[in-house]
Amino acid sequence: MGINRISPQLPVEAVKTYSVLQPIPTHFRTGSCAEARCPNMQYGWRSTIDERYDLGRAQAHYIRKESGRRFTEILAPSGLTEFTFQAGQTCFAQHSISLDREPLYIVRGGDWRGNPRGETRRHVNGAEWVEDFAEHQQTLADRLAQG
Image (cartoon, rainbow, N blue to C red; front, top):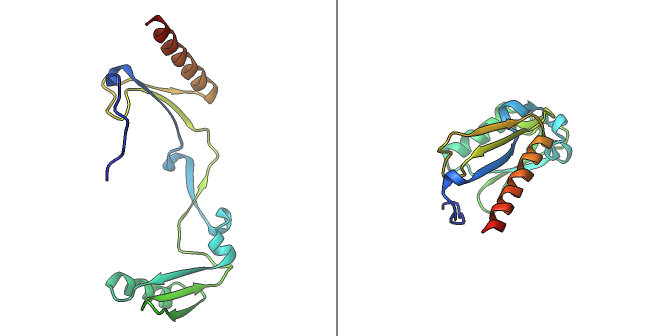
């Protein structure tokens, strides 16, 4: 299923895209359950595994023999194995912790169709980005008023 987009009324050359970005590689790091205030660690969690398939058998083996975590298991009426993990232990997720870095304030020519002129500008801070956006909006309003 594709993205549902409104058909643009202008050519791609006449459009600007304003973005505030926080890329994962530069703005986040891997962190522990405790740092992430992981609800699974705080309250415990349940994992339901389908051992009829290779992946499920491998997951169940890891939980039982290699994970080092405390759990109980039951065979659910559905035929799936339910592992219930006690609170206070790390979960299986990899958590991302924000580095609290300033976002990237980007203005580029074009839109989702492309940037045919190759125009890209990175503002130093949010105030400059907002000012650029406001000036651009005013330019559009002035052109519209002219007819």
